[in-house]
Image 1 (cartoon, protein in one colour):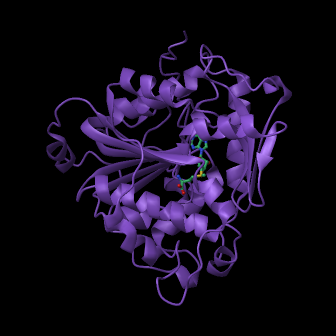
Image 2: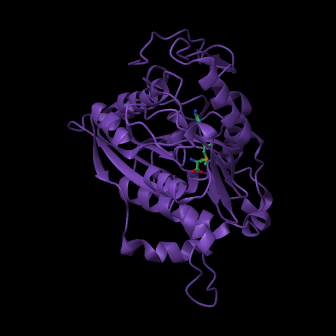
Length: 364
Ligand SMILES: C[S@@+](CC[C@H](N)C(=O)[O-])C[C@H]1O[C@@H](n2cnc3c(N)ncnc32)[C@H](O)[C@@H]1O
């Protein structure tokens, strides 16, 4: 079994040097070219997705699904984030959750994503420089933005001075780590090392049980509806998956107006075992909380409760059921985290310039 624990390759990070920070913290011997190439493909897909205007967003065929997903993330954040928390947002994308973190009055935010285009958009959103209609007040927490492969980089080393984080979030993205065992292990090792004892790891990802059931119910190796399709290769023609090799089970996922790239099945029990190995305990697997229905109404996923009765189409609900939500808690007693942060150990800024974006492992 490849534990994926190699020495730090090298790091050119030095905040006192040039403004531009290029660092290499990959684990090249653990991560074969093939998995790096696939990670790049995912990055290119997301990088190329441009920011939508409000009108474009409202016209999306999956607008209600997007709102439902935002509701799910808002619930998770409201339930588990606390005032003053230090947050690590892995695969933060274009910063779609920044407002949610602001509402939770967090104290510090570090966003990491492999897609350079997304991190740049995240910067624009953080600075409040988005298009005029979306111009908003500045966020109240300092932030740091990093372009890196979260599952192939020693973030535990790179961010050690910012740790411990109170909460780590990985929304709609952990499944990209399941392409190899080394990458999945690196993902969970990074999270575990950076989280404070008692800290939460929250996230959403596709539910392997639903995907495999749909595959087995399908006639061929492709299934879906008007807004999405999933396609497996001939290699899975038997529709059987060996328990002994739970990593690298790839499919192609297409979701209208959102995703079009390779993804990997994350068998829940393997995820659970690996998380437990990294001293995390499961808190919640699914969230069903009626107290958040008002927020659901406000976000508009189910209409506004008055005139607007528009809601998710059946096809959008089918996609919604593909995902699950998880909450893990790192074992151990919470320690002197606030004290540490008061010492000023974060490198966050209230305005992030292009040069402030840190780029790790330029070849990832
Ligand atoms: C569906 S988007 C979700 C973005 C954001 N978390 C949200 O909920 O709005 C998936 C994100 O995962 C990022 N991603 C995929 N593989 C990654 C990796 N190896 N390291 C860091 N980010 C990754 C993509 O670039 C993309 O921004």
